[in-house]
Image 1 (cartoon, rainbow, N blue to C red):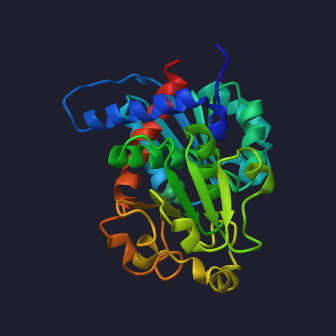
Image 2 (cartoon, rainbow, N blue to C red):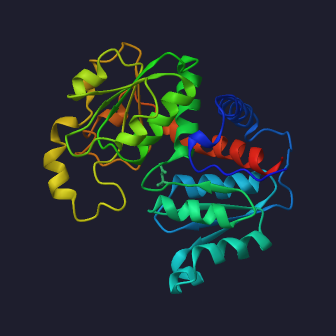
Length: 300
Ligand code: CP
């Protein structure tokens, strides 16, 4: 059977994505329970992280261990990549030694190059273009709290970067309506935007939030934007999420953020403590959804 990669949500069918969310629900139910299910016994993952990570890395490492496998964590400086070994050579070598590779890097083309050279599955653990693993957890969290996301209205407020792009792909795959409010110059990639017809760009955060079932934001200066923080703070000032903005949304709206959050920038000091905020459940679901993904790619 041909190997599968998970570089963007568009690599899987809507049915496969729903299957992952359902499997994550079951794995969560069994978490810390007595049932011992070790489908990845003897399997190894290599995790190649060129950028910082807490949630993604811990979820994959703990997930491999809980499923009976093992994960090796690599920083690019520790490997020969840091001394100029080509990505494609690294991909071929790791393919001889482990069962799956999980890659976080700024350049999306690096992950594509890695996956093309590898003979084993490759997971995108975040690039400047997409963060598909986060969306598995976000959809799981929404559906746990409010039922199917299909047909619902989601507001993305802030930087039209990797999380926003992943929400555009998710709108297409799960069939929800997405409203995006970003400052001029920070709107999502027009090509990604053009790939689906259920996304609308609006001018203000309040317009996006109006009647939203789910409201999402992300940091104003993602990894790779170092040195732009001051400018971005000014440009994004009217896009901060606070309790008053949530009041524009549906009464039972949910607020999510992939974390880490910068209080005083994209969120005020208190909104993460608001009862409408689901960020801790969302973060926890990274574990269960990534376990479902590992199982799907490795137990085939
Ligand atoms: N949300 C997210 O990907 O968190 P980390 O950067 O900590 O992995």
